Length: 216
Image (cartoon, rainbow, N blue to C red; front, side, top):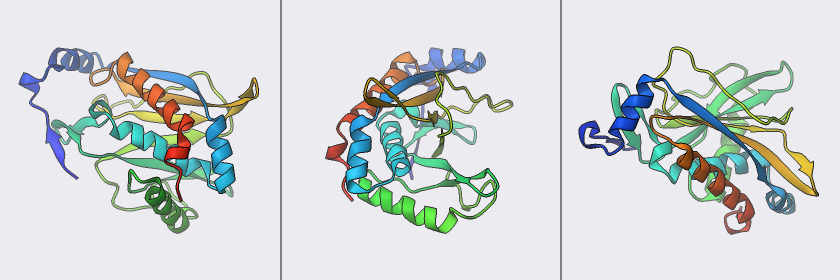
């Protein structure tokens, strides 16, 4: 996977990047996503929610350079493509493992990749059970036990972590619709409120138009 180096001296975002990187400024935005249609379509096709959720997040992340911009060592740039590094919960001891799955823009292929990884690593205990964590991975998880109106994850001592952190919550019913709390945390040096808003907007569009990509 190719990493594109950013020419910081001639980068139009240079003053914003340097200011907010120095300030160590991150922010998070949480929105309730209407997943009524998505859940209906998944149920009809007998498909799981979690891989669909991971696919939608990955597709949205890959649609924008701002969500793929990071340091590769000490070099600033952006990846051609990102893939999800996500958590799997173990019911027996209430721990979790972090694994990753190769991304594909084709949902059918991504779903098969997820199922293969889930089958091989789903019952392995430990924090990191799939070796070879790629450098172009980004963190995504879900807290299915509770709904929330905000969520923030602090990474002390790693102030140059620029990639988005996405966390979902327990979905809930309201006015005969089903909503998913979705939190996006970004570093202000590479993302502004506009970019975060586009993420939420495009994720909602994927949920609304899921019949166009739900093919397995």
